[in-house]
Every structure is written in C-alpha cells, then in structure tokens.
Figure (tube, rainbow, N blue to C red):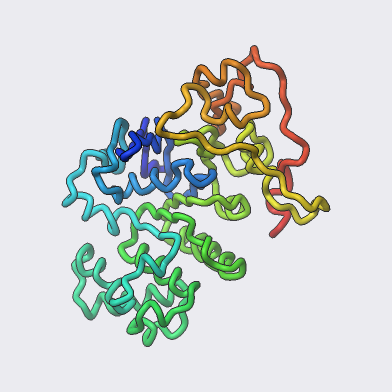
Length: 342
C-alpha cells in the first residue's frame, strides 16, 4: 500500500509555569492509503497532542517541536509555514473532533461551514459549492439535506452534528482523515452508525484514517492497525488481531483486562493500579515501570528497544529480552473473540 504519512522521532513539549511538559517523546509510525490506524491509551498519554501536531493545531508557544519530522508527499509538515499549512488543512487532511458542538461555529449555518472550504481550496462558485454541500450531507446520511443545509448547528441532534462534521472534513476529498474520539459524546446506537459511515466512506474514497480512542471495542470494529501509547511514547504496535489475540506489553494487557466483557460473570472490572507518569520529569526507563507488576530493575533505568514479534508487531518491553524471565499474559484479558460482540 502507498505510504501517505510518516512520523519520525517526533517529540513535542509544552512550556508551563511548572516546567517543561514532554507530552510526546520519540514517536514513530506510518500511515498507508485506505487503512485505519487506531492510537489508544489512557488520558494524558499523548494521543491528541500527536495528531494535533500533525495538523499543526497547537499554539506555539507554549507548544514546541523538539525533534523529529512529519512527512507527507515528501514534505516536512514541521517546517512548513502557516500559509502552506492552510493549504494542507482541508485539502490534504481533515479532522473530526470529539465534540461537534464546540467545533462547529454556532453563528454560522451548516451550509456556509461546509462550502467555505470548497470555495477556498477547490475554487468552486458559491452555487456549485452549495450543491456539493447538499451532496455531502446526503452522503453522510442526513435526511432532507436541501433544507438542513440552511440550518444552524443547534437545530441538529448530536449524531447529526457529528455527521455534519464528517461532511466538512471530507468536503475537499482529503487523503488523510483524523478522528479524535469521534464517538465519545454519542450513545452506542449512534456510535455504531458513525463508525459504519466512516468505514463506508473510507472504502469509497480510499481515505487513510487515524482514529484516536480509549474504547477498545471501537478499535476492534474499526481499525486495521493499532498503536498503544503511554507516557508520551508508543509502547506497542501491531495489527488489530495481534493486539487483541497476542499482546506483548503489560500495559496492553492492562487495557484489555479493563474492558467489560459480555460473557464475564464477575461484577468488578479490572483496573491498572497507580497513575500515569509526570511528564515534567519523565522516567528514564520504561514509562510503565512504576505501575507494572512484572517490572525489573532494568525497567527503571533504561528505556527498552523495540522487539519485533512479526513483520507488523513491535513492542518496547524488557520482558521480551532473551535474558528476562518468562511471563505470560493474565488469563482474564481479551485475547480472543475480537468480533464476539458484533
């Protein structure tokens, strides 16, 4: 598959009154045409900062690119001017935010919010842009688009607002679509509809998707590959089957163990004891060492190198070192039946 995005050794920090927060640390991944890459992890792990860095949506300062590159079409987004980025946003990349009500302009009609990108990036006339806007609303499943396009966001339901956000993000046929927790604010029925819509649109338009979520049920149904993020670092990557059937990192085990399971008669969910690290003073070794029940002395001192379990799966964990004791995943984690809840 054609590579549409390559992130190399990306590090992003924030200057605060309390010191420098190293939010993203040496992150590497690739995105290919027509695939969905899910980035998962607890709040504060660096997921949203990573994708906002790709879109160059962070205020600089206080944010700062410390190192690395973000390559698209052989050009580095990190070094682009704001004028260049204005052409990239919308035309090359689109973004769906978590809460459409705070992302849509409440003073502008939906039609104007869809058509402004078409007029600016595609050079359409107002009439042609409006016709295309109606087509997009119909494409994302909004009924009566001819009348709905003249309404304001507050006249839409939550699910319809998210569909309108998707229409805006897709208006200029971007190669990359970034979805940052796109279904968190929706009920499960609407959530399933939105995910199905994204899958259908991806098949039709060959768009590559980066999906940010903490919901592993969403990942199981929507993703091709998964990157598990913790403490500003990617600790494990693999195909969705590798992450669910054969996870290698104890943090991934913890995330899977905390998933509610329909066939589990236990009343209490599993949890990961402790709290994420303070990224003003990040640990020298593995960021998960302080919470890991299998941590060794070396885990506190040195960050492990990636170990490859297959061509598509790699994990940063000292337990995979040939000198480490053999540790098997807990029996209660979700290592099988990825699709059992469908």
